[in-house]
Each structure stands twice: as C-alpha cells, then as structure tokens.
Image 1 (cartoon, rainbow, N blue to C red):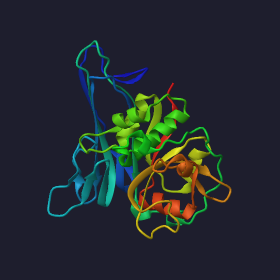
Image 2: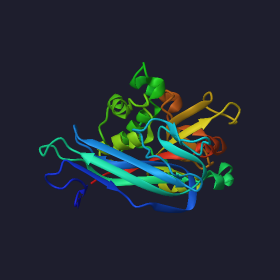
Image 3: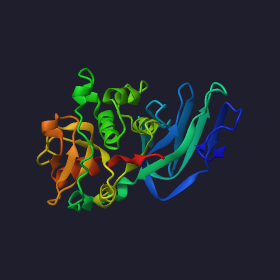
Image 4: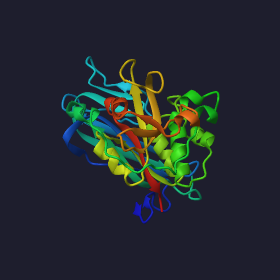
Length: 308
C-alpha cells in the first residue's frame, strides 16, 4: 500500500511483497548494485533483491546482500555476484526489483519504504579522460569532523573504514552518533564484513539520513554534489606503483570522505585510516585520486541530508 509516509503494509496485514516490471537501461551496463531508504522497526523483516538480464545469459538469479557470493550456473561464467554488486562479462539491458516486508504483529508497525535506488555503470564506455581531468574548485565542506577507525575499535579497527566514514558525515549533519554503534549496526554477519554498501545506506536511513549508492564516472558529477555541500564516501583501491604519491601502501579496498577540491585541483579528504594530524583534510593529487577512485569503479555513498 502506498500511503503518505511511503510504501508499507495495509492495516491488518503482516506480510507483503512487490515485484517490479523489467526496467530497461538503454545504454547498457555490466556492473550494478541496489540500495534503499527503508525505516525498519526492530523485530520486523525486510528483503530487497534484484536481478539483471544479459544479452548472453537471460535473467540472473535474484541477488542482494542476503545472498552469498555466487556465479551463474553453467560451463562458462557470464555474471558474478560479489557481496554488494553484480558484474557481467556481457552487456546487460534490464533489471528487476523484488521487495518483501513483514511484521510479527499489528502492535509493531511494518517497515516503510521511502526509496529504492539502482545504479549501474558500463566499463566498456569508461571515460578515460577523467583520469587526467583537473576537477573544478569547490567550497571545502568543513562541518564534517574527522574520526580515526582505529580509535573506534582497536580490535577490528582496520576493517571499519566504511562505518567510520559514515559516522563522520552523520555527525557533520548534526546527528549525535557513536562511531562504535554505527560500526556494530553496519556489521553484516553473512559476509563477516563492516563495509557492505547497501547495509551502510540502510544504517544511515535509520538515523534519518537520505542516502544511496552511486557509480560516479567523472569529476563533473562529483563536483555537482560537492558544490551543494554534499560530501561523498568514496570507495578506492590501488596497486603497487599505480599511483605517483600515495599516502599509504596499496589497498584492495578502502573508503574515505571526499570534502572538496582546492584551487590547485587537489582532492581534499578525511581519511579514517590515519590519525587526525595526518588524515584530516588530507590532500591527494587529482591524478592519483582519479586512478584510485574512478579507475576502480567510482563507487560512492551519496548522503545529501536529513529526511523531513
């Protein structure tokens, strides 16, 4: 039932489901993921899955964070689900979403769905020019504090870049947060990880922050957000000798907060992997950051503000 607050169950119902019609992406894609804004009271259940249709394999299985890593059945691998995104060897043309919500009883309000966000990219038309593009200057978003992930939990600190970055942005919007609580909420026992993209977005919305995952393919799109005062949590990676002047050793995956671009085109970040004296307002050359971010997918958490 679509009501004034969003999509939820009709009065008296305990279980409901929705499956969209196939939705076409005319330009095609070979990577995709899903995120959502759903208020989910305790003891209720929520399942959000999607599938994609490829030119060589038809429909994939239903996929989502609750699904273990898998590949398509058959002799030749055509698509792979890896924790929080699907990738395909061949172009895909459509996607479809399946949503299920339930509540154990009338006394507990069912989840309320505010929005579901699909994002995709086509690596075959990747804009190589963006790796050398000098981004335009933006105002620096100074309201975001710096947190160090190793201070949040000394035992698991090396795994907490995603929730620590999320906590920084929530605090910047005036939400009173405990980074350790955010980390606990972001933990996904199925993958034993704290950095599952849709889970971070789900946690942000429980704190009333609008948010989604987006594949950002160039600096024009990133600057669009930064100029509106919207910081981005960027997923980066880089190999040995790939960057000219990296601030730390190579990483297979790390998340940090993008705050702005200075007048020389340097990228200004809060890096949770480093203490404040090194990681707060850390500057990267635009070439290094472009390679580490756009060159490895351009994934970002976009968190534009607090919901009404």
